[in-house]
Length: 156
Image (cartoon, rainbow, N blue to C red; front, side, top):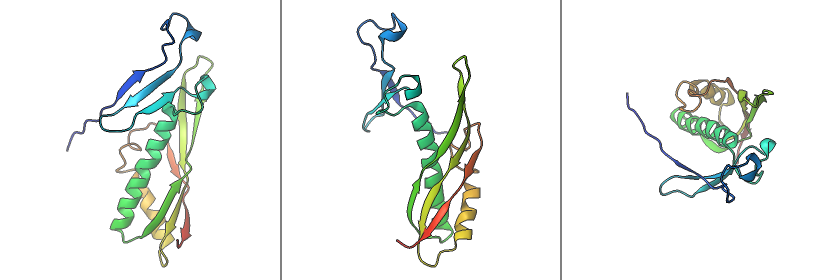
């Protein structure tokens, strides 16, 4: 078994001059800085007053879950002799917030549209999805169910 370390630097950028002296006196913005990569400017969820033009932690978790699934799908499809020409996903993650403000994700549905080469077997491609949750770093780490509702198109 191999152990992997992942790092990022999170830097709060929302001090408007008085720090957190008052609840409304600071922005909920920050940067994600990873060495050698572009900075990601972030804010909290727009439902909580965040900037809707910036990524929030929920966006990033949804994107990470979807991207991990996609990368494993491409890998396992290639191993199975399935030629994937295109892949896009519009995942839907459902969350709940309690009156106290505590919140959590309840479930996710990945909804990839996968373009397969002419002559591909959609059933064989569909079977690949069931293997991914055994290996995907992100899917194996979340504590909510993740379902797959894949759609296929043949040809470019």
